[in-house]
Length: 292
View 1: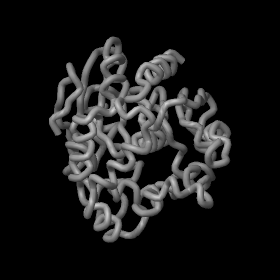
View 2: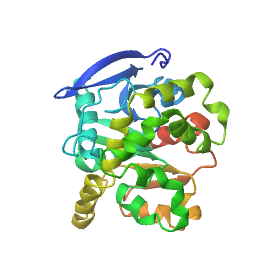
View 3: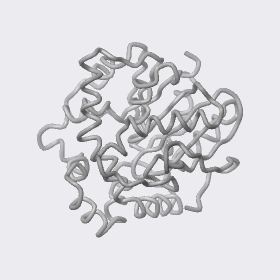
View 4: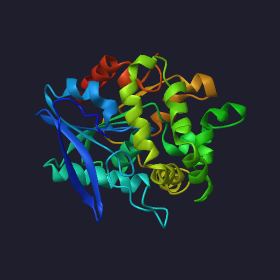
């Protein structure tokens, strides 16, 4: 992948046995880690990262299984659990010299961020989630014909074999579909960036499917344990979401309050790819979070 965040240094950092992450690092000051979503790479943060780097150390990895990071096989179904991916992020920050850091995630990256906040409350100082619900809630609100918007969740939840074959037969059509329908401003993802996302996703079909499959199994189990134990996010939390609650019939802020006592929940008017469609709004929300 040739696209890079301008002014950032790139390196590979080993975070687990046989797993190294591709990471872009820029700026100086208190650290914030930015985790990308599907079907994207760290490049989705290019505008936000450049702004935050004025007074923060900004760390933008490709998640395990995505972009230029390693894509280990997943024989036992745990390799792409959000718990495993969250441990990657903690190990990455530590390798870069940061025992504590703020964390923001979009889409799949937000699910990793939420799990990191639950599993590592002394490490994650602030948490931002862009356009997801926690995994357990996500499945619980997907009902009836309105749930068709999440068809990909059900496809990639199937046992190994069929999803990989179907998606692999026409990956650009599959991944491109989401890049097209989830954005309200097509110019926010210019052709060269879209091409980079498609190339990265095309090369990562098995690991992307494994990531989603985990969210229909082991990730749900982990969330259920936390819910039963009353485990909540202890740090200040900011959530930016499209108004999915109105579309699918649920109280998004109410669901989030069950997980986070110190919560700022806001709906946005842009599309799903808000870090590219409304970077100034995202930066403002992150700066406000870091000031709490």
